[in-house]
Image (cartoon, rainbow, N blue to C red; front, side, top):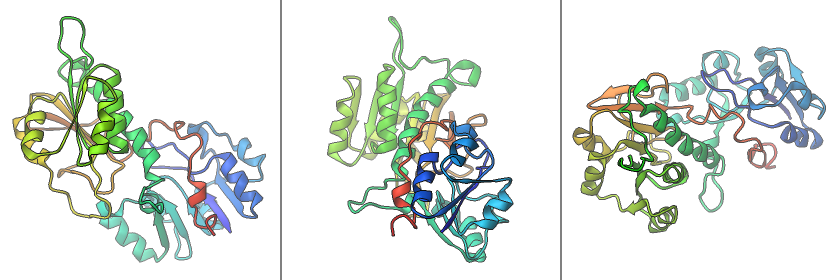
Length: 322
């Protein structure tokens, strides 16, 4: 099979779908692999690292798409990508179509076959391709929130970890899965007061092991309402796979009793999370609503291009699994 790996052109995105080593394994298995020129630069991979393993380098996106049967990329196709996709293509990437019906219709019009990374499930029900991006997104949510709470960024001038003689900041996290758990780990490490809500007792127990400054609670509506009312940083990290509708969340009505100039972040690797009208936003342009700065970034893990240096994608590629 001829596999094409184009350069990501979505704003703020610089990851590449497959590392040189992964491409080398595909070549060794008898496949032809073409990578667009400079597609791996922002992830720390040069064209020469691919070429030495038998990968062809295409001059541009048109050549990459034109030669390939299977397109493997990171993020969903945008306008310029869509213009190059054909009916005979097999597309393998993050799609999140539940939250983007217009893209779903466009892909249907093209007539190709598309497989979303976020829909690939292991036998135990885990989502192995979504999980590492959720890990990154969760940690970044706390890092970004810490920065945006600074006064020059429009925040309240708060140091989340506090100091002797000052109170700690309060972080409330809805969901203790991959994203929420990693967000909690980061917040706990810097010394914030952390409250995490989840339905599963095992996850709540895991949150308690992060430190004495972390509390795990069952998400009763009144409990969430009280916690959100005093939150400095609120991180929504719930996952509702395959549900195209905005989920009904206690956070929706709890926002009305929040502190002034707090921050509400959705690390959006989620399929359909507790989203609000008007989102997504960007890190540089959060939304102001009822006393909160709100940030939901569909490319939350993107700034850490080099974080997944050895991605686990290869075993799940359609041609590799056969």
